[in-house]
Image 1 (cartoon, rainbow over the protein chains, first blue to last red):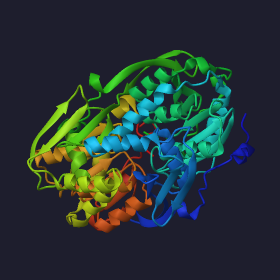
Image 2: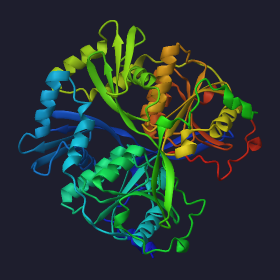
Image 3: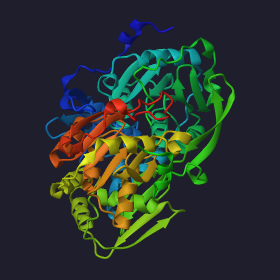
Image 4: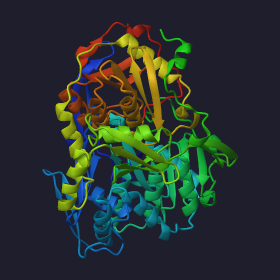
Length: 293
Length: 293
């Protein structure tokens, strides 16, 4: 079973004390009394691929380079073959420019698209689905004892969520060990920051598990599959299309995971059910964690 | 105090029984037993302004015309002066085309932008902030007794959230009466659908309150202000920028509203504190509602 010490095993853990990530504000409570509280920051970050402006993300502001790299990779705008020459983050301008050695195929596609319709926004989604076509996920096994151990560690890891709320968390795990725990106000930024870290560090995806506090929507499932990770677990619920895509690409999808309970709606074949759910404690009411809807 | 009958007073209420909005799926639970559950649908909808493709939204799929109108209005792409000639929804193509009598200023701006940088994605955010500059919110009062009554009615209104989870809700209210309750998988679609309904029906904003299950981010605050609604309340928490913008435009912002508790971080002057919080019941554990993070 997981020990308290396991929390120090993270390669990257949340930094709830970081000054730049929360702001102290003053208001009134239900009795009209003055109240001070910490709320999470939210900043725009504009991502460029070479000279091409791609998107402005709303982010808490940590790890902007990982966010840019992971976003471009997960959207299929940056491919495995693209050689990254440099990444420039300008804090004042709130921009990140990712520079590749050669022009990417995405820029070429964008230019063609722009000529016909004037804009590329609508292509983003089509590109993501297209990117999935080559994906095959590895046929590994995942022990339910590891899943329960991960949930127990992650739920009591100090985080911005516990400190200030209003934020999503995503954790890259291996076996029963959580490795990288990213948080962000933007719904998909946390997972993109993990993708950017994996890309920068050349980390293998096949033996990993992704755990998220957010809902299992199509976009979360697509991003996980694009990263090559065979398993996605969440405290929250599912959308029908998220389930459908997981089944199509053979991703193991687990949701509504709280205490001993969980539901598996895709990729059951990867599960080794070695834990007895009756031995897993239910979550106390004041666990501090809710499912994100 | 609110009566059960009040639920039937909605002009538009959620339709949790609607076949098209949920899908029955089968999986396994934590004991490995087969389990059937209903999960919410999620579909792409591509929005056009005249011949210009604008965005592909991920939506549950109800009220596509309101979603398109409200999105364009809240993004500042459609102005009060623009005369709408027609709106065409094509269910098979999953598109909505909003046609205006004259070309909009937005299309002109987009064309200029496209010539210089090739794409318009990044301008969306700047446009929203720009749209706020002319906004002044009316100096009305809101009774805390009405807020408590609204929360009590909304929390026990049958909804897709209670049926299938993984969805956001936003409710347009007047006094102690909820009028239009929209739900959607896409984070801001619920509020855009309300904006579209208001635009279509020519509804006054000054005497309204907006209630949401989601977080009070910059985008939620901007959209509420763009709609001319002076007050936004939520069960969930705040971001620092959401608070800052609310203070700048003078919007009354209430968060973390559960049972008798709430926090007001902007626009306190609109509140008439006529309810005694000690008389308001705390929420039972199984209220079925959690704060969305």
